[in-house]
Image (cartoon, rainbow, N blue to C red; front, side, top):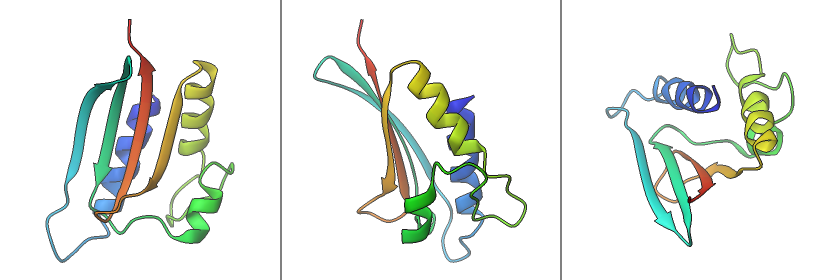
Length: 103
């Protein structure tokens, strides 16, 4: 459910682009005995106000949003003891990173 919510947010961000085709890039790599999963989009990125409130329940930047998707992401991943970040990418857009301990 957490990854579905992240992918939906990325797709919603792409809907705001009209100048170039939208891209969602999903990649995985191993780093220091951890699997790093990365989901990046080339949408408009996150505003400073959004960055401050990403995980605040019922905060949304979308007209029809409910503001619970990222709260669920935080809770689900936190309950599994997983580390993650969600931030603007230096290449534009937003990037979500999740670290999963390697077996």
